[in-house]
Image (tube, rainbow, N blue to C red; front, side):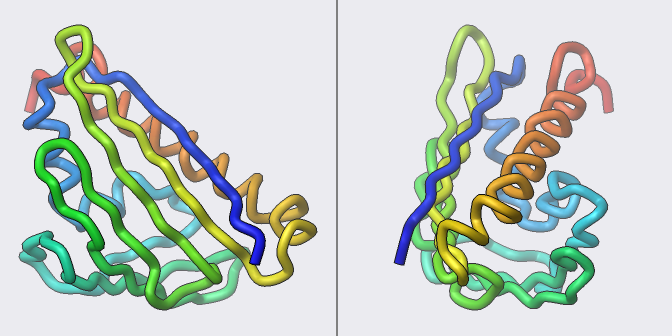
Amino acid sequence: MTIFEHSSSVWLPRPLEEVFAFFSDAHNLEILTPPWLRFEVLTPRPIDLAVGVTIDYRLRVRGLPIRWRSEIAAWEPPRRFVDKQIRGPYRLWDHEHLFREDRGGTFAEDRVSYAVPGGSLVNRLFVAKDVEKIFAFRSEKLWELFGSAAGSSS
């Protein structure tokens, strides 16, 4: 199985605790996912994230309906957590979220290790581009929510 890596990061001018609290609500993943995926969290609120907690989702990948279940594999507030796909479209999906105070704000980083059916060819033709678009959208949305004065009014 070939494992691919993706990482992205964004600096946000908001306190670490505020940014981590946003990520601590699994339903906020709907906000951070591009509309073209029609992503929906199926697990009802409240979801108290902790090691071993599973979360169910529904989405569309290239028009095909997909069910996804992830499990929280590490939970270290407010610095880090890891979710792993236990059912879904990937052969492997391990997603580490990292947060640290930086220059009066918060540096948020995503590190993903993933494998796809079809290996390198499928990844090169389809998946890698989609993963890039998804995380670019996430960074833009996080900046929209927390960047400059946007995060100070609500």
